[in-house]
Image 1 (cartoon, rainbow, N blue to C red):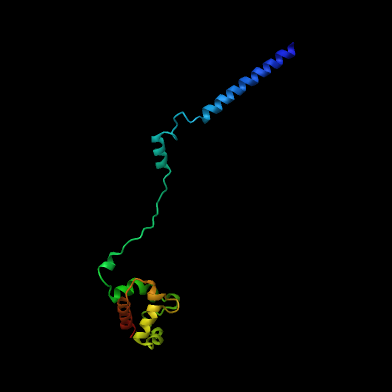
Image 2 (cartoon, rainbow, N blue to C red):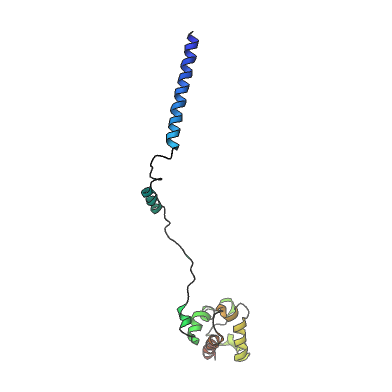
Length: 149
């Protein structure tokens, strides 16, 4: 009989422990209670706390300068050509090195203009500014030729 009481106590103890565990797990996983993560105000506060330090957006911007008319030679040179021709990047002849320009000057103005429009060596067509007109390119070329002659 003592064995029957002992196994009965073990059974009731096991049932009680299982019921307590089930109730605890249910309370922890039940979504009906209002937590900071589930409440509307708490969610807004959490969103504010986890915002990134900075945001980066790419957007296409219409250039207002194009609407104002064509650019003159010095402006085109300083905004496009000067990046390479002031420093000699990728073998570009420097604006102040007249000896570097001698073989190019032998092509004549029309030959140089064709080289700039179509690209030559490391220089892309129109110096990488494909939106420029041929007249703007010619103005920049005239500005360069005045400097190197």
